[in-house]
Amino acid sequence: MQKKFKPLSKGSSPQRGNISDSGLSRITGIPKRTLVSWFKTDKDNWRNKHYWLLKSFNKEELVSQIEKIEEVKV
Image 1 (spheres, one colour):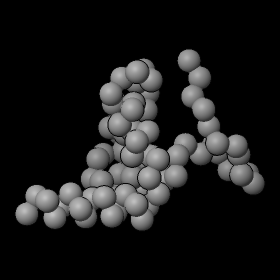
Image 2: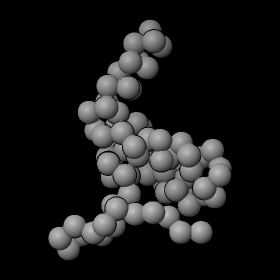
Image 3: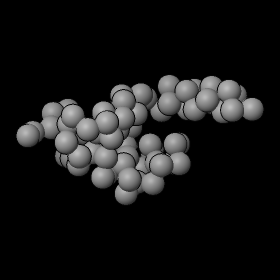
Image 4: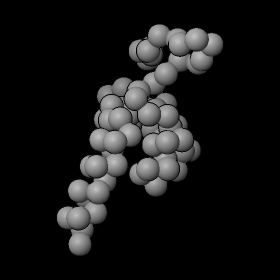
């Protein structure tokens, strides 16, 4: 089973999504180790789908979504 990656930029490693795992971890509070384990699961697993959903957002969209969730919690 092969994952699809964006093409390489100048001297960089393959990119997987709009935001790095480290950035995703900082914004969401989900440990990076957890995100990596979600990435490694089978593509039909809900964890893998959740990982790619989070990765589909850019930083601004993700921060906006989390702020909306925080408003609902209050």
